[in-house]
Image (cartoon, rainbow, N blue to C red; front, side, top):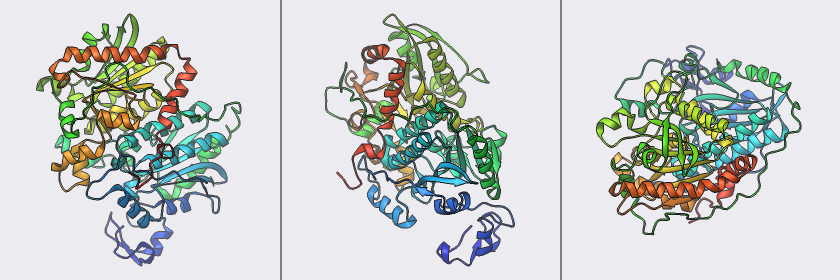
Length: 569
């Protein structure tokens, strides 16, 4: 619906779907759904709460996550100024409202996102608040209800915003393990890192009528593929046809449907009383360095991006040929396809059997095209998932080699459930009962990288990059044009030195001068030594301790644990 006056003062609104002029009070009585064509207008978080929960039952979480500016991001405006404007414009402290409530008389913990606040983007504070809500659900053994509305991860917080996908996912995983139900309600729009994590890895996924959901947004898909999108692409009905949601529910029926689900789930309360509350002790400090620590002297971020993309850098197959022994490739997702952008299989490392999984690009244009430039399809993520689970059954450690600009953003990938495939990988890795070492060897792009990088140890080559979004994508959104990509690269703090300082990676691996493409054999040897140095100690860690520490590793990326408030420099 469109109007010019402030919403509370509007007498009339024009429907964005059919252009009908509607009396505002009538529209509000109809839950902001056009009575002529059924278009569902977007709701802010307070309005959504008023419609969903029993009157007077909502109690906000007693604590607030600290507002953070972890990388000092500046585009045309400093990030703190954008936050201040969002707070003034919405009256909210952040892009999510969290608490406990009753729906139809049934208790639940509830997190409702608000798209008005910086596009409902997932930053450290938002991830912390949703994680605390899930932990509250676990502690009180009540269902978790998530209402999503988001454009994705928050670019202004760099790769730390990407880490929130893992942080919240492992909180959802803890609910799964304890048998505590979780439900997500997808509202318009739900994209990017939110779609590829907690929005789609709950027990039940509901789409409100008119909602759109996907990993890549329509504009990105058009730009990348040059194709027009089919009618109804990424809509709730599209998602239902392609098996990505459990049901599509109109707004007027949503509260009743949630109440019915909670009534069913409520019969399970107390069924597993012996499950302890999730522990949150201090995170173990990880020693810096290890074999191959870079010699010092940081390159410009944009120059590093170009080095990370150099076609002469070793690929996953190059590492498998020289750093590992006896590689036996395993193919297929066991459902429909074998994605060439993901290779994986059994190998030996210093005489020890391991499962190795990685993105495969190539060195020539023909190889890059054949491997889709290392951009995995849903089939690729599901193949990786199958191999991870096989490794767990066979008691093998997992080594992942990450080198991708991001997940496949094509129409077919969206039809096949790209967001849900990434979300399931992230969730599974948070609980995988075997050691996992990830190495960022070139590009670590967004959720496509994180799908292989939720690990006990994350290593990074000296001239690799790891980011929530590409510099070109960031520049196109936050700067006047894409020519600002070098500025965006610097603002995103995506280099290995940046990410070591932020605690996202555990150790850096030196490259031969000037970079890995100049002496691939030396780069391969350095990776082999670094993986061995970090994997061997993990082999003696009991499984329960291993998983607990991995969860603590990603839990520390919440806003309250970063210790950098907005404005601090």
